[in-house]
Image (cartoon, rainbow, N blue to C red; front, side):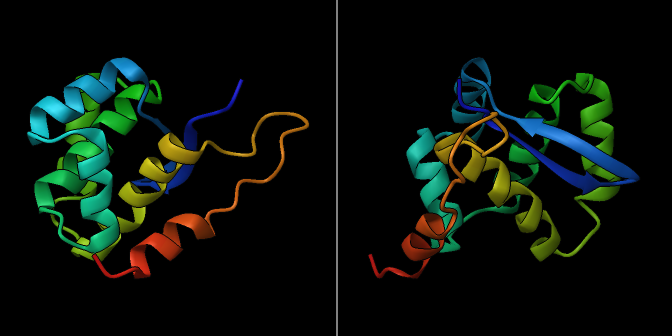
Length: 123
């Protein structure tokens, strides 16, 4: 089975982020768009700040953090920081959701350049 999680330093330590299927529905509801449109907004740099914060919050919940603690972490470590820092956290969460990660034993490395290529394409 493909691992859809992403590990990254956030706040005060390394954390696990994941958006499982049940949270995809919540992400779509909160942001008012389908998952493909949300991801495309990030790639095209047409996102809203709320997009980034919600991806991080739900990613923390999907990674095993408590919902209240996740909101507090976002308030403390994402909202007051430069937007580029929130993007650097949110984009790999979405990349893992769309492409998986190579965390599985025997899994081939995931070519993350696919998302970079998409980001450079003109609409």
